[in-house]
Image (cartoon, rainbow, N blue to C red; front, side, top):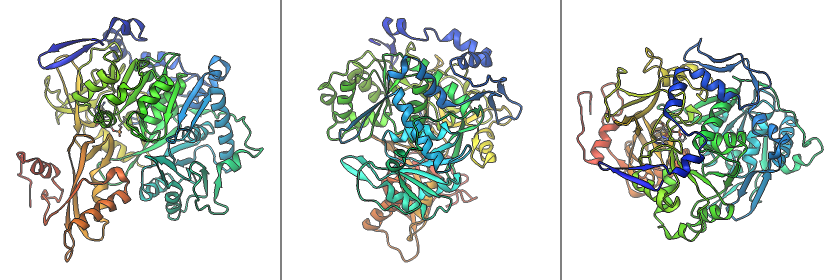
Length: 634
Ligand code: WT7
């Protein structure tokens, strides 16, 4: 990656001979063309890398569009592929996971040890009545028991629903209710920026309103005093040392299309959607994308610095790297604790070779300057990755030059909770342009089109669509198949395309540039939040009668939440009230949703049908042209 060239005003980075020579995939154009021409053949070839209990009959079943099925008739379990099959090879002695807690404690697990811990945990779950087809809710800090719990559920045929540990009890209640979980796994707390988080307390609050929960398993992490209810709450360490938690547990055979996990994500309306992923297609898709895009080798130490509670963590901390037999790094806490060199210290200490993170994390570390990474020998890094939002060229260059020493290609991967894995992404051999996710992954046909579905010209902005199915795609929304069709497939029903909800451009070289969300979804620090969720949290404050939320550009977070509130009669806007409302939203949804500002107003711009015109609020806030106001009724 040392060679750069100037093309107009844009920088282009060419891969070095060395990178090309050693890459798994050495050629893109021809393989891509073949993968499009015969998609099923391409995916059948990739499925050869996976162990099936029983071979599948059909690669793709498209008889009930848009409810596509992959590898039908096949019997599989992702855990067999992630763990069991490595136990009879040299991999069993290799490190599967290296974990460092924020206070500095370290734990490592070989594949053999990971299997033992997963089996014991699975036997505990069985003894508590968890059965095939159940959905277990997991609400945990970033400790090793989190991936272990996920794998244990799946091993015995249950699906997990991991709720991010930064969410409030209300968000947790909604998700438990929707999934009808009988069992929840949590911890007393976790460490973040030198403080502890009180997870068990939040779970206690949630269970009070969730009658389906019968059992709560609690991992001891901080050792702080927590309330445990007799007959309902159990310490994991008590159960896991009992004789019936044996270190042997059979992995249950699942159908390719059986549910693997549910993951909730924000949409355009208030209620979060339970996105459903399944065993067969997800196993093939995530492992193939991880292997080809990050060019994984036996000597690699892979660090995806995301929270396991998000899709990035599911696909690329837990499942794909284990299927590929990688050594995975996990870290519990904040990147700048106790000092801004924390990550670089760990890269040096553990000899990390691939780092995959978000633009918001890069910007956050960049502001402390380059002397922090320069204190450490981070030359073990050979590849870098970015995900979650468009990466601004300044952050790209810092990442490339200061962290990658000008030699590590940056894989800017575009994808979504719903896609399961990378959709538009470079390979190590790809010519890179800072800010572009470059080209579709093999098998994927993507386009940028107008409202009617006509392709827009090079460089023109349009809507990003996916024209053909892929194995990692979400299968439905839990208990709401209509919403699945409505959200993703309605807009381009005639063409049968998936509507990604993003706006984008394709340049003259065929490279994709993602601009941002078109629907009412805000990306804050890479996290996805619905304006409707934020607005409903605002109006749940006693003084607020109506509210609107918009995103405005922010140097660090990418976007920040700006809100507008109409107060109830007799209420007076004040600094104190603004602060109180901000705290209220943070409490309702979680700290990531805390608004930057609450503006008190007497009216909101609305259409005649009563929809808030957020683009008008945004234009006003930025001092821009308000655009077409013909539907405005203020
Ligand atoms: C939305 C999906 C997939 C894991 C993390 C986010 C935005 C994601 C990129 C990228 C530009 C990106 C899109 C997408 N996004 N990756 N490389 N460049 N934008 O998953 O929470 O489901 O959000 O994140 O807007 O639609 P998610």
